[in-house]
Length: 348
Image (cartoon, rainbow, N blue to C red; front, side, top):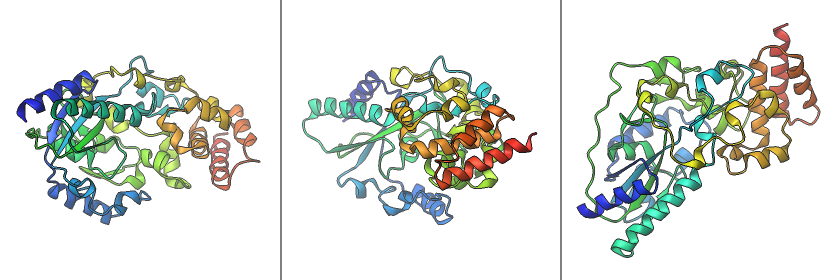
C-alpha cells in the first residue's frame, strides 16, 4: 500500500494535478463546525448544504465502504490574463473571478480523476471508488487539509505554502486502505488581510464566512433579487469575487496553471460591462458554452451586469443600454435595471 500510494501521487502529477494527498475519513471535529455554520443560517439559500444530512461530513455514509480519500489540487490562475486588481479598479470593465475565465473545471477535473482511477485499477484490479469535484456533499477543504495539501485560511479557502489558494480541489473516495499523509500547520498567524478587504464584510470571524453577504454567493448561487444594501458594494464584480485571495500574502507563491483549458477564453479578462450587456441570449449560450458561468443562466448574468453598470461612472451609453432592456425584462431583472438607472441619474 505504501508503494501504491507513492505511485498514485506520481500518476496524479503526470495527469496534471499539482498536489496529491491521502486522508482518513474522520471528520468529527469538522462536522461540529459545519453543523454550527448551518444552524446560524450562513449557507443562505444553498439548501443543498443541509439536505444531505451528515453525508457531507461522513464519507462512508455517502459512499459505503470508503476508508480513504485521495485529495488532489490543480492550479487555475491563467497566464496572460489582464491584471486582476487593475480590472477591479476600472469601473467600466467587468470583473470575472479568475477561476471562471477558462473552461468549466468540473469536467476537466472529473476526467483526470477518472483517468487516475483507471491507472490504479490496472495496478490492483477492481476496487471501489467514486470521484468528485465540487459536485456532491463532500467537505472538500477539510479533506484536503487532512490529506496535507494545505491549511484552511481565515477566508475558509485552502492555503498552501507553495501554491497559495488559486487551485481547484477534487477527491477520490475509495475502499483501498492506503497510508495517510500528515496535515500541515496553519501559517496564517496574526494576518487578517482577507477579513479587512472583503467588500461586504462576509468573513464575520476568522474561519467563519456568512455566505449571504459574500459576493461570490450573491452573483452565482443567489437566484433572486440581490439585497440593495450589497449592490453598491459589488462594484464591477459580475461573476464571483477574488478580493480575499488577491490580498493574501501566500498568493505571492501561487503558480500559473499548466492546463490549457483554464487559459482565458472569449476575452473575459478584459471585457467591458457594456459589451457583455449587449449579448443576446444566443450569444450568451454560444460564447459561454463550456464555461462555469453558463450555469447561472442569461437572466442572472444580465442582473449582475446591470448592477455593475449602476456602479459605473455616469454615461449616456450606459443609460441607453439599460433603457433598451426595460421592455422585455423579467420583474427581477427590471428591478436591477431600474436601480442601475437611478444610480446613473444620481451622478449627474
